[in-house]
Structures are given as structure tokens and as C-alpha cells.
Length: 222
Image 1 (cartoon, rainbow, N blue to C red):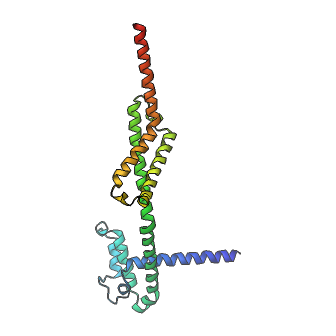
Image 2: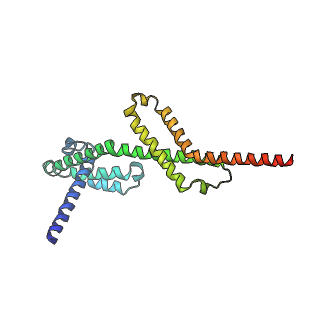
Image 3: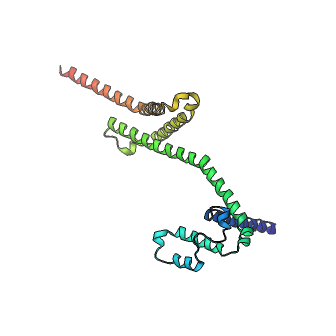
């Protein structure tokens, strides 16, 4: 059992190492022709590149470019036939991995990232608008009591509802994209009014009770 586990670990380590090396080769060489070039376009000895790496010009060209140039020159020192056997398969694997990663990012990670960012910004905007409105209605109420857990949960729920509407409306209404901004504004106002409803009711109730007290005092004076 231990030998099997050790064998799996070794195999995984080798696979991870080869994948990393292939990605490095794939990112350093633009094409297989570039990898198998007999005379490099910008020939430089490994010693010269190593000197450049330790020189004061690092801040001008950058460590990344220097390291890339160093790695290219190390591989260029290997004979072309050996390069074709050792590094051409790695370059192919590296390009496949890089293309897969780029496709995954464009199709999945980038849209999800933009959705999450949009949701966060929208939630913060709702939080600010609702907080200011409550402060206007109740100036003496401290901010710590305004932003209670219940209110924050309601705002997050409202923001999720707005995001869901934005995603589903194009499926229901064909012309939604033409009126997207107006629709989002209307939905946002509805969400804000629903969240503020209990605060508005309480303000009106306090105002009515205050007026009633004033009327009673006037009646007593008369």
C-alpha cells in the first residue's frame, strides 16, 4: 500500500513538473519554428544574459523579460535535433494547457467575475442610498442602528433580485437590451421603496401622533 501511495505521489510530482515546464516553454516560444530556429533572432550567450540579470538595468527591462531571455538562450544552446525531441512535445503540451486556461477564463471565470463585481458594487450602492434615506427620515438614529443585520440581509436579497431580473429579463422581453438602464432604474427604485417601507410607515405614524398631540394641546388651551 505504501509503495503504491509513494508511486502515485511520484507520478503526480513528475506530471506536475512536466506540465509546469511545458507551460514555461509554451509561454517563452511563440511557435515551434521559433523553438527550432538554428540561429536565434537576438543571439546572446548565457554568460552575457546572466550578467544582465545581475546588472542595474533590471528596472528598465524587468526581471520577467530578463528571465525569459535567459531561459530562451539556455535552450538555444541545445542542438536543434535534441530540442526537437525534448522540447517540441513540451511546447505542444504547454500551448494546449495555455489555450485551455485562456478559454476557461474567457467563457467561465471572466463572466462570473464580472457578475460578482457587479453584484458587490450594486449592493454597496443600495446600502449607501438606503442608509442616507433612513438618516434623512430619522436624523437622531445612529449609523450602527441603521445598518442592522436585518437591513443588510434585505439589501443583499434586493441586490440578488435585481441581478436575477437582469439575467432573466432578456429571455422574457426581446427589447430588454434597448431599455436595460431604464428597467434597472425602475426595479432598483421598487427594491429601495420596499426596503424603506417600514421606515416610511414609522415616520408617518410618528408624524400623525405628533400632530394629534398638538391638536389636543391646542384644544386644552382653548
